[in-house]
Image (cartoon, rainbow, N blue to C red; front, side, top):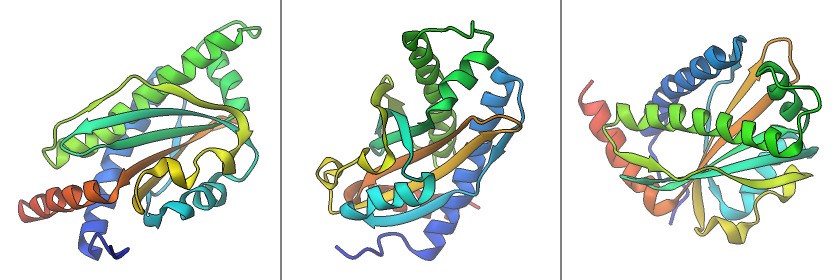
Length: 203
């Protein structure tokens, strides 16, 4: 299959829709943490399976990170991965009013909660705009304190090509930052393309 799975018009529509969903996610986190959230422009790529890990490194660096994964399913399926810098755990605990000596279990419960909010608001906002019904599995810890380049191997992608959507959330005046990456296999990208065509026809 060619790498050109989405047309230029479909990519532009997806970027606009993702911007809206990302804004909803940022607003949710800002309300909960009472902090201003900086949002990046969404990055959208069609990548070969072996290009995903290098792309993650180019976006977040190869420092040690932790990551949470959350599958989505329904009108289209895939997996969202939220990558956190290691210091982010402590920052979240501090912002939520936890004791500085909060233990590891509580820290991970916090990033699971944050992931659930980000993924639900962002991808849920995208799905709502294109009239797609999707559901979410419970988030789970994917990796703890490993180099970002080791998060995903090509074998784990399960497809020759994948849609790779990345957005970056950061808090003003804090070291907290995370990257939300949505991965979808090539057969699901075609379903998204059809939904985007419908969306553009209704404008």
